[in-house]
Amino acid sequence: MPTSKWFTALAVAGVIAASACAPDADTDDGMTDDIDAPGDVVDTAVPPPPTGGMAPRVDASMLPEGVTQEMIDAGQQIFVQAGFCFTCHGEGASGSQLAPDLTDGTWINVEAGDYEEIVQLVTSGVPEPVEFEAPMPPRGGAQLTDEQVRQVAAYVWSLSHGG
Figure (tube, rainbow, N blue to C red):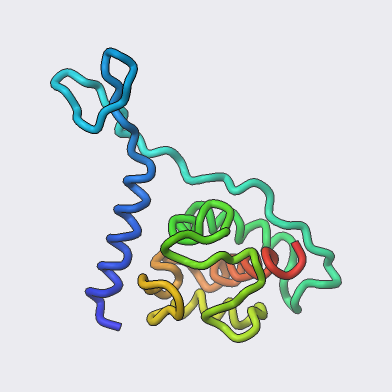
């Protein structure tokens, strides 16, 4: 896929995420407006990413080979922080207008949603999504290591397979 399409998709996701976090300025009457009057003080601090709560707990006997609860926990933190996955997939990974729900067990860009398929999908991205307009760049557009990709995949797997 041409670089310009990736850039456009990431720019759109960034604008949507930024606009969702932008506070309205308050006027003297306590009502909010969309126009900043001279002298208005506007808080431009961006709130931190969601903490996402606790990662799902999965019975160790159900985990794919090589996956641990510690990987799932680390993957959850990457999902809501360094990976910025929540920006498109939603805070609880329940989907948005940009990307699918990862909690419902329905897989639209892989066949069965097994762990290795998810690892491959996160690694290579989704250049031509089945149901959504914006493609997912490789590694979600973040600078994730192979280990971090495997951790995110473990977390995503846990959301629909036993958490």
